[in-house]
Amino acid sequence: MAEPGPGIDAELAALYGNWVKRMALLLKARMPWAELDELLQWGAVGMMEAMQRFDATLGVSFQAFASRRIKGAMIDGLRREGSRRRGETLFETDEVDAAALSGGDAPADPLSLLLRADNRNLLTAALKTLPALEYRVLALHFFDDMNNREIAAILEISEGYASRIRKRALESLAIHINAAQKGETVP
Image (tube, rainbow, N blue to C red):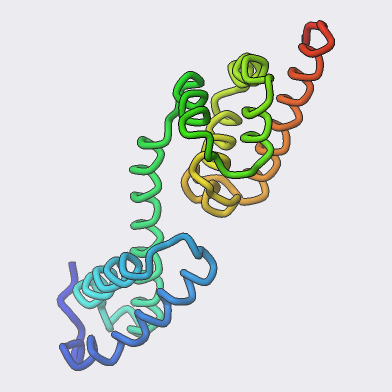
C-alpha cells in the first residue's frame, strides 16, 4: 500500500466531506430505498481508504481516484445490506398464507384481494408451482412492499429483469388459478 500523497491530510478530508455528502445524495436519488446515513458512513470509509491508498506518482488526480473509491464503498455497502436482507426474506407458502390471513388488514393489492376471496387454496397451490426466483420477487413486492428497483438491488439483477420476472410470475399464477377454477390441469 502506498503512503498517502503529499497534501492529503485532515484539511483535505474536511474539504471532500461535502463532496462525499453530494455523492451520497446523488446515489440516494437513484436508489431512494437506500438509507442516507448508511451511504454517508460507507462514503466516509471509502474516503479514508482513498486517502490511505492514493499514490500521486501514478499520475491520477486525488479527486478521480477518491471518487471511484467512495462510490465503490457505497455500492459495496448496499450489496452487503442486500445480502443480509436476502437472508431475511425467504418465505414458505404456508407462512405467506398465514401472514395474509392474520388480522385481515393486508394492503389493497391484487394478491391480498385474491386472498380475501375464496381462492386461497387455489393461490397457495399456484404459488407452489412458481420457480424460487419468481416466488421471491412476488414475496418482496407484495409482502415487503418493495418496488422493482429495490427488488433488483436485493437480488442483484437489473430493474427491468425484476419487472419481467414479476409480470411472468403473475401471468403464471393467473393461468394456474383460471385453469383450476375451470377444473383443468396446467401442463
